[in-house]
Amino acid sequence: AQSVTQLDSHVSVSEGTPVLLRCNYSSSYSPSLFWYVQHPNKGLQLLLKYTSAATLVKGINGFEAEFKKSETSFHLTKPSAHMSDAAEYFCVVSDRSGGSYIPTFGRGTSLIVHP
Amino acid sequence: NAGVTQTPKFQVLKTGQSMTLQCAQDMNHEYMSWYRQDPGMGLRLIHYSVGAGITDQGEVPNGYNVSRSTTEDFPLRLLSAAPSQTSVYFCASSYRAAYNSPLHFGNGTRLTVT
Image (cartoon, one colour):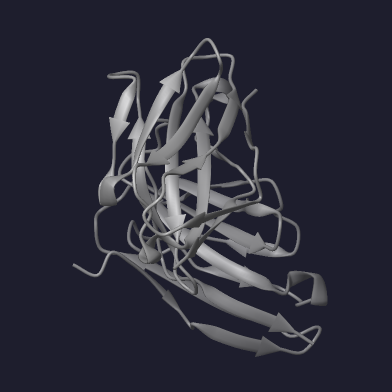
């Protein structure tokens, strides 16, 4: 079985400071992991994905995430926050279990960026 | 290339009414799915399809019906609307029905049931 936990429901940062959004996962297999971003009144957009290649994954808009198997984590980071980064972020895990493609979504982290 | 298109954007229903939420994708994606998003709950899978003529239930299928007669379209039917179905509904598709294939989302339908 697979599961995912986003450790913070809200994260508040000042513009220009680093961003850290935390995600822990559980999986019986080698999982794929994704981060999606949702701006207000929009659908979700893929930021980046990990699929068993390099453990440090670079995404769009300067975001990156590191897959750490020993810690079962896939935290999302960005060196310098921009006002346009204010959005909801979802961590998603998916593996081969069950034979069907049913990814599991975290409950989301709301990123607030102060000027 | 429109991607995933959902209609309508907004809908208000009275309890007991039925309606169909439309979803179409022009990317020749094999996999399509419907989610509902409620505050603090993340996204929950309602139904999904791994190809034309094949559908299956997700986490919260009760009160909803789907069909997949073509690769492009995956409508979601509410049979008898209830206030508990007030939510934002998202359609998502993927190139393959595979665990490592990312999802492409529509912009959502905001449904209110009174």
